[in-house]
Length: 93
Image (tube, rainbow, N blue to C red; front, side):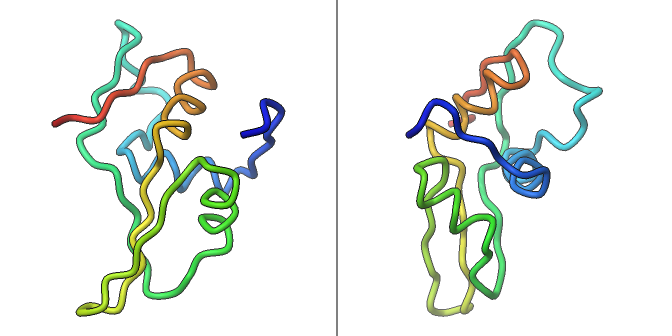
């Protein structure tokens, strides 16, 4: 991934939504955030997410039975968001 990646507001909003980090005013005070979710579902391919997949900040899979695309923020994407907001983001297991 290019270190000078510039994302749109829409892409950042979708990544934050995917990991449950929707409200910037509620960032963790200890600098650590446990993402209780990591997905974004849609019935059509999403241009923003497809670009994120292309640059390595997200992954995508298509679920045949419900005809939906599921996008996930990759580890590189979690790291990117963490640097942007000055926090460490880990997925809850």
